[in-house]
Image (cartoon, rainbow, N blue to C red; front, side):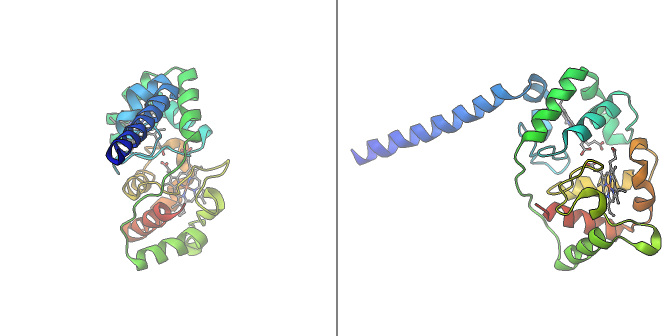
Length: 204
Ligand code: HEC
Ligand code: HEC
C-alpha cells in the first residue's frame, strides 16, 4: 500500500514536471521552441558557456542585436557562424516575440569559477572603472546589480566566457552599434577583462 502510494505520487510528480515543460514549450514563440532552444535553452538560461544567456535580458537590447545580426553589422566570427543564419529566418514580428519571451524569463544563478582576488578586482573595476585610462565605471550604465538600464544591457549571471569573448570583440570595430564600449574595452588588460567577467557572472 505504502509502495503504491509512493509510486503514485512519483508518477504524479513526473507527470506534473513533464506537463510543465510541455506547457512551457507550447507557450514559447515558435522560433524559440524550434531553433533558439538548441543553444540558448527554452528559458534562455543556456547551459553551455559558449552560448550567451538571454533570460531576463532587456527586450529592446535583444531586438537591436537580432536586427544587427540580420543586417550583418554585428560581425565577429561567432556572430557570423552562429547568428547570421538564425536572424535571417526571423521577421520583425518574430524578433519582437522572441525578445519579449526571453526578457520575461527568470534568470537562474550562474556557477562561477574565480579566485577571491579576481572577484575583488572585478568588483572594484565595475564600481570605479579606471579613471586615468578613460574607463567609465560599468555601474553607471549597466546598473547597480548588473541588471541593465535603458542605455545598456544586463550583464548579471552572464557566462563569463561569453563576456570575455565580447570584451575582446568590443576592442575591435566588429560591433559598430556598441562603439561606446570601444575605448573602455581597449583600455582593459586581459587580466582585468577576466576579473570583470567573473564578477558580473557572480552578480544576481
Ligand atoms: C547553434 C547555436 C545557436 C542557435 C540555434 C541560436 N543562437 Fe543565438 N547565439 C549563439 C552564439 C554562439 C552567440 C554569440 C555570438 C556572438 O559572438 O555575437 C549568440 C548570440 C545571440 C544573441 C546576442 C546576445 C547578447 O547578449 O548580445 C541573441 C539576442 C541571440 N543569440 C538570440 C537567438 C535567438 C532569438 C535564436 C533563435 C531564433 C538563437 N539565438 C539561436 C548561438 C546560437
Ligand atoms: C557609457 C555607458 C557604458 C559604460 C560606462 C559601460 N558600458 Fe558596457 N555597454 C554599453 C552599451 C550601450 C552596450 C550595448 C551596445 C549595443 O547596443 O550593442 C554595452 C555592452 C556591453 C557588453 C556586451 C554585452 C552582451 O551581452 O553582448 C559587455 C560585456 C559590456 N558592455 C561590459 C562593460 C563593462 C565590463 C564595463 C565597465 C568596464 C562597461 N560595459 C561600461 C554601455 C556602457
